[in-house]
Length: 134
Image (cartoon, rainbow, N blue to C red):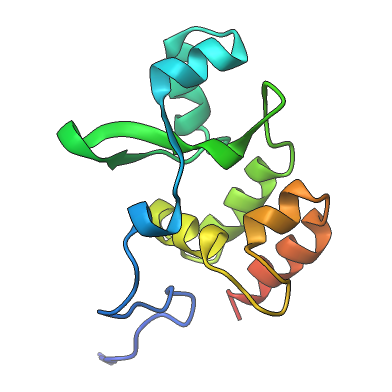
């Protein structure tokens, strides 16, 4: 039987000095407001979170489930989001780590991966996300 202490290579890097999600993502929308914005039921929004179309976290007072506002563009879910979330999950990222990666500034972009996705650069962002698994 072999035993290794190696951490999975796909694990997101963490640091005690890492900013909180609330610091990285400045604007959050509660799930009921997402439902209203999208014109769907709250049940449908819960399904979007369950199937990986959206990422939600418990944020703020009362730890209410919220979604980053950047994920909703012109009354729709950012179209490149679901596939990118899938790639990040395949790379071993938790939803919280995926949010951190999407909203951490990257000087090589410039901006954040989510900014690049909003600008229509999903191929570049997915390529970077796929590279995280290697």
